[in-house]
Length: 250
Ligand code: SF4
Image 1 (cartoon, helix red, strand yellow):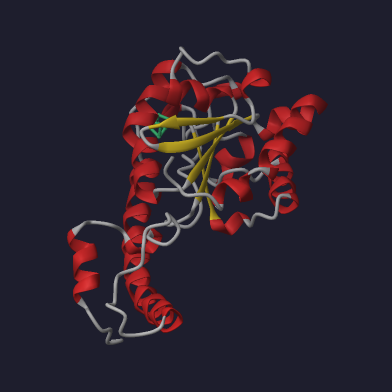
Image 2 (tube, rainbow, N blue to C red):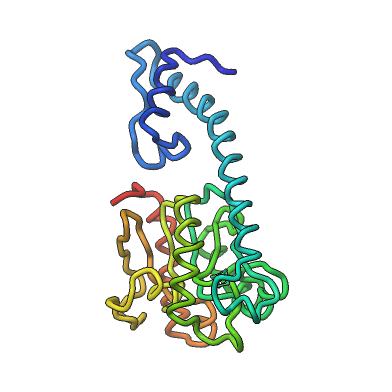
């Protein structure tokens, strides 16, 4: 194990319950080493020390997220479980800085149990690549985890159940720096009816909810059909890298 001068720094961090994995990303200061070493040496030592702590923290999150996904796969809490083939919990790293929330699994997702693998998934992949983002670094899920019959819009009670049981826990566990809401359903699910649902007026905006930043945009399936929505979602995704470069909490 790497020895660091002032190991109380790491202990103090744990006592303050600050996840060191994100300490630098959120602009929090590095520990004070009382001027024993120059800044670069301190930064290198700290990164090395964080590396081992990060691996443990990431492993723990992975285990918890895996358990959560297993629970979702057997969930029968709302009527949507009766018509699904597979529930689609989500996909991505447990410490992703970016989370995408879509509406609901479609036919392909329902068959394979994975999010965004149909044509909308291909469109999303192209969108991510054009925005300089890597899908494997992103956690992707949806407002409801089971496909509604005939791809109808999820009902309010279904979305409320799925949010309180699963989505809130996914957000808390992954703890992303930025969440992108794709489409009206997750927008209504997380912000309620008070939010006007004309995405043409709302897209590109950042909204705060419980201290987290949410970027509002269209659903990729809508963007595939309508050129206006396509241009809008491209503009919105182009903002993501810049938003991630800013401190996570506003
Ligand atoms: S949609 Fe959500 S709440 Fe409803 S059965 Fe599926 S996982 Fe459970």
